[in-house]
Image (cartoon, rainbow, N blue to C red; front, side):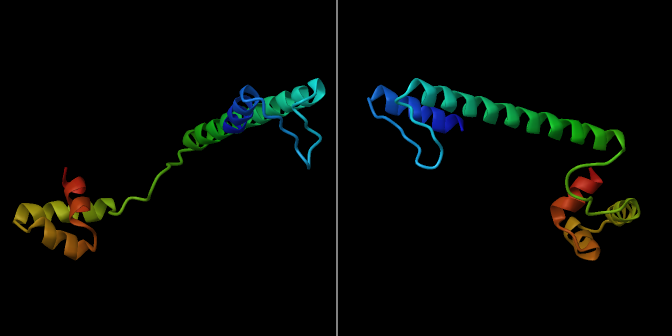
Length: 111
């Protein structure tokens, strides 16, 4: 919506008049300009409310103990098994093959 407002302001500076065929908005008239500004205001308000509700939902989920993001690739027993294999001298590639994960996942687990 912000880009649309910017575009209409740019058109106005170039003396181009805007008239919506589906909504009764005509930027040539004071009423049309006022309607356009009210629509822009309501869109901005709705966007702010959506952001506020989203943040509140995320905070409520965190308070309930929920985690966001991808699920861990390895469980705690698998990480312990990877540590034992690494201490035994197995390479990260070999451990990754055994656990069916990438080498980077093994390195992150061992760090």
